[in-house]
Image 1 (tube, rainbow, N blue to C red):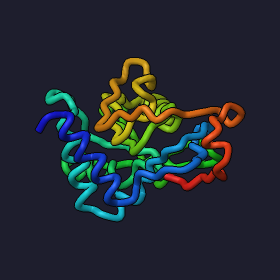
Image 2: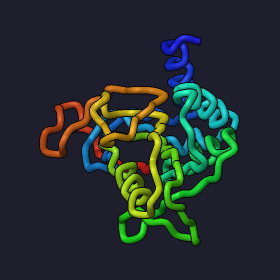
Image 3: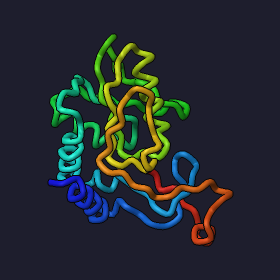
Image 4: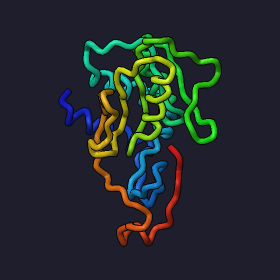
Length: 193
């Protein structure tokens, strides 16, 4: 299957499950957009999550080695767990404590442990960066970041950790004080991922 055909299949999954929304949205980053990926809607359909994980895994380099998948909560939980299941890896998640990500529930990262970070959607990649910082602070090694949707138009990067996305979208984002006329006339909502 070509990358273009795969992109169309991914978009169709988001459309069919009601996960690709149009309106006026407040993103976690504080930016505004006329489009929103609510990946939790895809998570209602585990067969679709299975398929998205299969396609995402085809994008990873064949020689990429990791023993653990870690996902920032909430968005990355379902896809992260499925990627871990399909690769026979251990699964961890980082969760918010006082609006910062932390490892809880006695999760441990061993010195030198190789981890794949899996997230649903990134715009700027703030939660992914927090996850990478957590891994490093515990002596682990992040080998890659794998996301379903990169909304950054290729602008997001994570130092020497490669970013692999299933779908890149270039939906524009705006600061709240620089909204185009079309968005100014629509009430803003923050639907959550």
